[in-house]
Length: 306
Length: 248
Image (tube, rainbow over all chains, first blue to last red; front, side):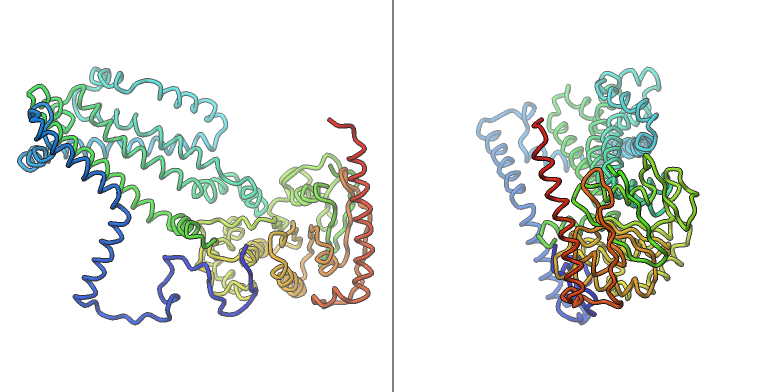
């Protein structure tokens, strides 16, 4: 616990967070119009920070690609067996129209499936955390359902709902609702019991405790679930397309592979993984916007300000 | 846990409860607040026996625990208005009422901050303000300054005395700090170890308003000696009792 000076007017917030207004730092900030020079320096600074943050993993990636490139060239590995990174890159460029067309299909499946997973997952989590009966009735079934391999259900879905976009959406939803609901349930339950007592002494009803304490308290964990769910939803779409489809990146892979268009298979993989990363980053951005308190607090703690 | 505890706090009185740790002081407050049920006995509010059913007194008695229990996702301002919000006030009205009191609670300028940016004492005052905004007649305080450093604690005690003097609430304070109990209270109850009984009721006849210098006056020292003697006797009885128990 830090030293405390009670009632001192103008007490300085010694735990200034990095997000606090700048005027606290060095007195009032004069608003100066940005010059070309200042724009360039701030861009360089941003690039440097990014390099510091991502530099190590970037380096590993570059080394791996270089080894792959050199090895395929030196050992004269045939392209249909293992294309080199440069071949894959040129395939990405040459087939961009084709890849784009199929990417859109997969993206729609992922987004719709994930939206369904989010709705179902959150409703289930809320019900399970709020009602003991629902918890006993539904929670074991949800957990048991995860032992059924999705890949075994996917072909059955074709029989039940046909070859359209629907079975893919269902597979995506089935695969990504689980981490969302389980994490959210944990978050809803993790509230400090003293906090619930406090709310009760203020006269809160059960529902008020749920909406004003449990739900906001669960958001960080809910977002963990969402980030996992959104990353694996891409896998769901590919599985859905593998068992029977006429478009989408998963279809493009199963179509290209028997024709030994291996570079195209790899190009599809690159696009799929870019899609997964993009969706994950999008979820992280939404998280940061929705939980400003959580991230400033986390950062303040990690800097050792608390 | 509690055996025979009879506690009276008149309107506008400041009463403290002191006793060995683990004797059930917090249970006593939980029962008064309506969070827990007593196996026997009753709690009268305004000489009224209504509201004996579990939970019926909830929301009618202010209760502040040792932890500040501020919600980390709410600004200081929005934390303090929680009680009003739960009672159906609009956020706008509740906020304007809270803003008027920010100065009194030493939180002016920090309304928009998140709780983690505040010091321990400020967080405690914010929690106290949340309790006080509901304007209940009776306020229970469970070791509110227990987690603060010594200097801050003294400042908070003087601040609380001043606030109580102007608000005239009935306060029941639980503490294990003898100075704190004597300095703040009109009356101090000393409890025995488990099962708790009232061992001593001490009327603190010191004049008001008091300040921290009072702790060095002869009257204060005399009362303190009496309290400490009772506590020491109780403590040694408890330890000896434990030493005499067969090993499990």
